[in-house]
Structures are given as structure tokens and as C-alpha cells.
Length: 115
Length: 113
Image (cartoon, rainbow over all chains, first blue to last red):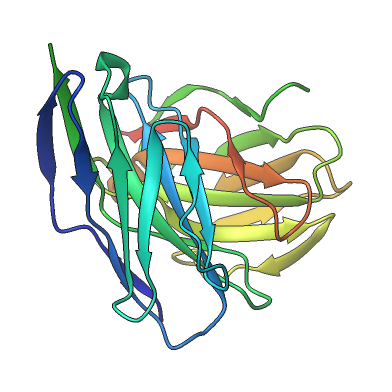
């Protein structure tokens, strides 16, 4: 079974600075998908960014980018120019590339952006 | 609809009662997923459907939990004889196809007293 580990329960960053959230995962598969979801205080679950394992290029969405290291099974999220609205719980998630489409989530990292 | 709609948003029930949680996915979305999220944890998979067919129910914790999607649209997650350990946020998500990203609903917060 796949596992997803987020080793940082909490992090904080000053507004306008850059922060990196860590995620590692364990799988024997070669083709899969990785995601970062944001859960603000409203408790919504919002997709931040997605990476397909067969793509070598790191995904980028505006201020959000990932560092995908397939051999190391690492998938970190970098948030540039942090904003107060980035304060949220961030979850890393894994999905198999096969026929099972369920997501396996990590336990999350609570990010606080300070003014 | 514009988003995934779940009802009720909050449900408080007494131990031993049955509860039914409803999910109305985005119109046209083929795949529908149920997850449970305990406080301070990430969501855990319960079950998922393609159209009306339940494809995987391996995450349902025991036989008190069941789900259906009879017409391939709205889905209901039913918990029979609720217990305090069932208290959690229950989230529904849908996707246009199996391989697409999910859109999550706002969840139903279930409290069993």
C-alpha cells in the first residue's frame, strides 16, 4: 500500500517570503500522480498543484511550484511571495496511475503566514 | 451545479441512530468519491463510484457503512447504528472522468453524542 509522509506538522513564514513544504511517499509503481491540496480555515479542500510522475518537468502554478524528485520519492511544494491568504493546512496526496483512482493523503502541514 | 454540494453541513446524532449524508456532484461528473477526515488528519478514502457502479468500497470501515448512487448522480452515504468513533468530517468529491482531478464538497461534520 502507498504511504504519504509529511514530516513538518507546522511551519510559519513571513509575508512575502518563500517557504517549502516537504512530502515523501512510498510506492513500487512507476506511473502515478501527486497532488498538493490546501485546506484554509473554511475547511474547503482546494487543489493547488498536480504532477504526473512520467513528466520530468516540475509543475508550476503562479506562486506555487513543486520539486519532484522521482528517485528519492520526494514531492515538495514551494510557495513564493507568501500571502496572508496562504495560511492553511496543506496536504500532499498520491494517486496510482493504474485502475484505482483513490487518493492517499499525508497528515498535513499547518502553514501560518505572519504579517 | 456549480460545485459539489453536500448536505447537511452539520449533523449531530445520538449514538445508535442511523444517519444519511447526501452528495450532489458537479453535473456531468462521472466519478464520485467519499472520504472521511478526522480532526488533525488527512482525508481517508471510503468508497468511489463510476456512474452508478460502486468500483471500490475497500475503505468502508465496517458493515455499518454503505453508499449508493442509484442513478449515477446524487450519492448517499449511510451509517447505521452510529458510534462516537464515527464523528468526523465526511467529504464527497467528483471528477469528470476517473483520471481527472477531484473537486471536493464542503463536507458534512458529523458528531455522534
